[in-house]
Image 1 (spheres, rainbow, N blue to C red):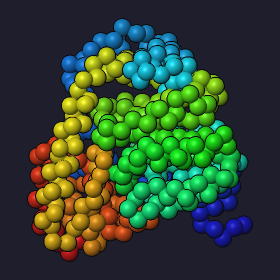
Image 2 (image 1 turned 90 degrees about the vertical axis):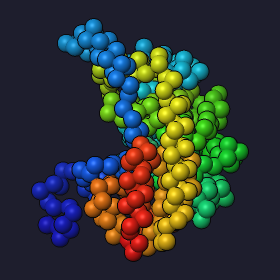
Image 3 (image 1 turned 135 degrees about the vertical axis):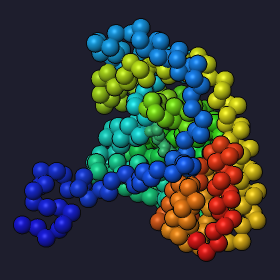
Image 4 (image 1 turned 120 degrees about the horizontal axis):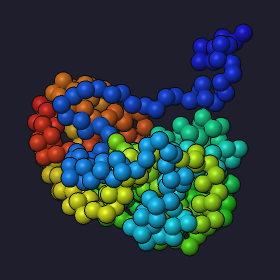
Length: 361
Ligand code: PMP
């Protein structure tokens, strides 16, 4: 018998790494204003929804979908100016992160920074990889020397997020280039660009022509399609062939394939909405300058951090005013921080009005 309550004997068949890994940290709470998940506040345009449904209706639902979603991969390749043999799709980029950690992390190393996106950590822990996290600089920029030192090790998978989550910081292309060069052949180097439409950055050229580098992108943020679940990787044909072995067959359903294909045919709305979000972010940061105790931190994404005297109290007080944000105060360098997604102007007004009434929190 064991006295460890996390490892009861009745679950002895479940690997200890899994039992020791915390669940994805997320508390769904129903509030009128939802600024907790960095989603687009606007839905996919209704006429495009209808077009996607019509296309899905025309496809058979009794048959399995296209094995590796080849048509969809081809369309993503065209949109991204990439070799279609190097495109991999999964139901959300979370799944890609799991598969990349399986491919290059198990029995090896997962290297990232701290604070970082929780999924890199959770997958590393669950899959029993060695997790190495180098603390970010105090201004949230990448710790170049510390990472270069760790990159001497390996092999493994190296995650860089540009712009970064949860800080919203964008590193220069030359700093990121320096690290991916240092990673060399020993690492599968992943540049996660989940939020790049808001920063206007595009680091595809750091991966183009290199066998073991990937760009990871998602339809969940600027595209406003989080509900459909689609993420993708842009990489070399050689690495894509290896990664594809880990992707479950038929993993993108008929409906998602149809809808994402429609989105790629009518992508104009994305840029316009991202610009509106960036303008709103500027307005919110400016308004918060007048707050007596909170300090909002600059960001290159559709969310920002706000440092409060007491994150728990501030989080609850905002909920009492009908606004849900995300606590982030447990992370390194993030004492007192809440993460706030930029919503629609009226939602942001409601957040700002509530914030101004909360001082102690
Ligand atoms: N990477 C980063 C940095 C993210 O913030 C997120 C969304 N929380 C993801 C990946 C995963 O997004 P999805 O699975 O919806 O594609």
